[in-house]
Amino acid sequence: MSFIGGAFKFVIFLIFITGAAYVGYVYGQLVLQESLFEVSIPINQTFSFELNQSIDLPIKTEITFPFNDSFLINESVPINTFIILDEVVKVPLDLPTGLVVLDVPIKKTIPINTSINVFKSIEISKDILLDVDKQVIFTITKNISVPVDMNITTKIPTPNWMRK
Image 1 (spheres, one colour):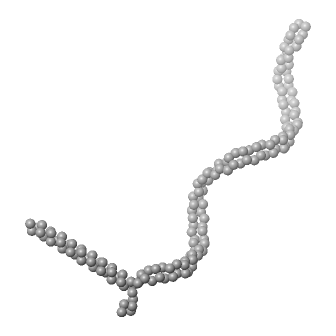
Image 2: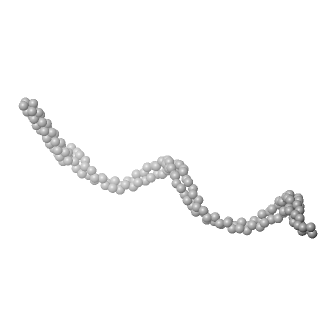
Image 3: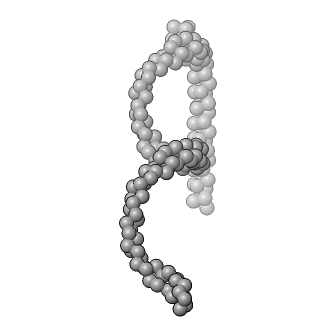
């Protein structure tokens, strides 16, 4: 029974010490509040600072833009070439003795010298897809001014000369 009685007395002692500490804390806060007074400080000033920052911006996107246009072609295309014939042609020949098919060899080079006029309108209508994957690095250098017009309210300790 003496162990339980000793433990009980110890718990009562801890409760008493904790209560005394709490009362002291509350009293200290009240004394502190009484020794503070509230002041309002007006601020009307412009603060300036220089911003000098490099920014690395990755850009990855797809851009689709339509392309609709027509092109007019009005040209003269010259043709200067040769056609070479080296063939055997079967020619039917009707003779009094009957129909006879003869093999007629043709060997000839035919020159072609001419021009062809081309007058044509070509319509192109297409969506063009462009993939962009680029790192863009740029620097921002700027002097920034920030006007501040406000009142700050705070509590400050009462000076000793005011407490008398």
